[in-house]
Image 1 (cartoon, one colour):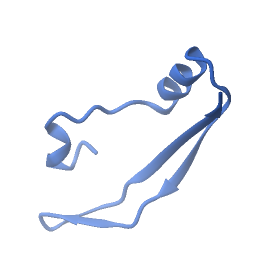
Image 2 (cartoon, rainbow, N blue to C red):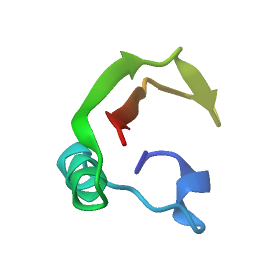
Image 3 (cartoon, helix red, strand yellow):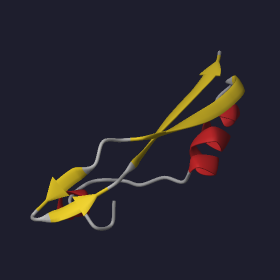
Image 4 (cartoon, one colour):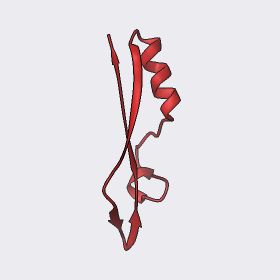
Length: 59
């Protein structure tokens, strides 16, 4: 995301462990995060490959 200019404006980046820890802290159990490669995108002539992180838990 650091390579994409749009992420410089009001976009917060979190580490996977931080998100999972927050979910546990607010009462979620069986917390897990799935990493899914997103389709390659073109930003201003630069090809970017991102990984989507999808966290879930049971409340």
